[in-house]
Amino acid sequence: MERLEIPKKAVYRLSLYLRCLEKLTENQVETVSSVALAKAAGVKPTQLRKDIGYLGQFGTRGLGYNVETLSCAISAVLGTARLQPVVIIGVGNLGSALMRYSGFKKEGFEIIAAFDLQPDAVEIETTIPIHDVAELGEYVSSHEVKMVIISVPGDAAQNVANTVVKAGVQAILNFSPCVLQVPDHVVVNQIDLAVELENLSYFIS
Image (tube, rainbow, N blue to C red; front, side):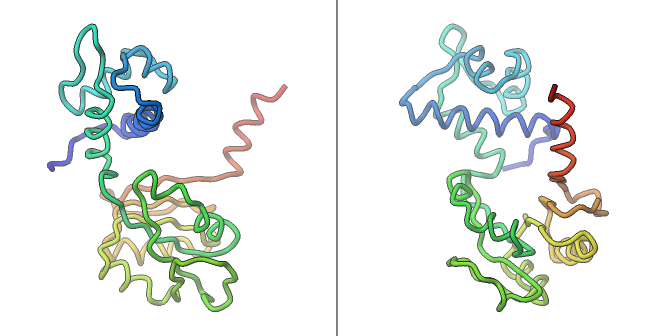
């Protein structure tokens, strides 16, 4: 499938719509109106219709969207119609917690391996293989991994990013407290928990 040019914020909202559609599927709902789906996702109906418009023509006036059809269309565009292989780099407390999370497969992602400076010292019960970080570049390249999660200390994050980008990675979820410098074709989503808490504190009276 040819990659569609969709704004980054719209891609994020498409993920929200997909979660809502999955819940509707679980409740055996076959059709949903744009108003109802927009309300469930927390957006305006006009925004939802614009976002879905990036995918093509969906929905029937007076009837709404077919839940299964729209789910399949969004999954295909987001690349979650099949399991997307993901690698975790850094198996400390956060990395270990991410490895134990069972919800990734449900959303179309599979943690196929993890890497650490001291893999033999990692104490976690898991079926996911844990390798020495020295093997990272070769593994990513040979397994055609396009997405990684970085959860290493800030002073090591850039070197890790350089390694995986050189090996062919195109998307990075970065939990390290470091702003990564990557080529334009690589997408980085920065997750800084301290910043998120700081933002939330503004709303606390």
